[in-house]
Image (tube, rainbow, N blue to C red; front, side):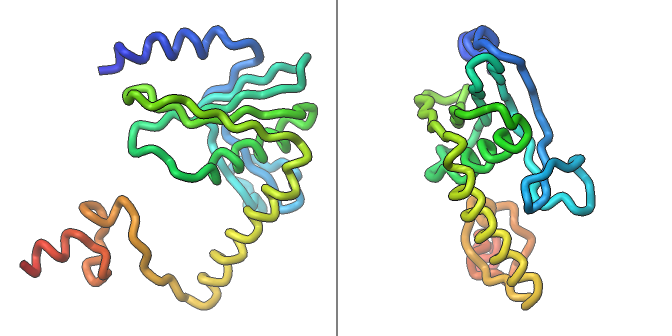
Amino acid sequence: EFTGCEAIAASVLALPGELHVEKKIAFAEDGTLREYWDKDGWFRGSADYISVDYDKKYARVFDWKSGKVRDNNDQLERMALGIFWTFPHVEKVRAAFVYPVADVPVKPTTYVKEDVPHIMAKLVSVVRRVEHAIEANQFPPSPSGLCKQWCDVMSCQFNGRRAKTEA
């Protein structure tokens, strides 16, 4: 089923730079690097593919996808942020979702080091919302792609399996 991916794999392997696969990245809120499971690790992520060209101060990061096409770049922004913290000499990151088994064009986004404060502010906002929800013990339901068949919360209004049992 993956024979159609050979051309993509060959082109990715031909890209210049030091290769990192399934690179685990973690840092504290101030941007200092941490081991992946350190207790004071504030953000953790794993990048499917990173290539770092030290001479050009440039990195590429790809996230392989097999599901539906992503409609926002939050994950790409966070991967770029992780690369800027992990490889401090990098000044530009090209990030993209790659759908190797679907006929979806790769649409890379470029991030520069000057984007770090903006990306970090967005990430802090998300983390603060989660922290507030935990403190208040309030987790309002919201629909996702998992609702239709995977969610175990039968009392949730969005659970697709609940509707089947009520019918």
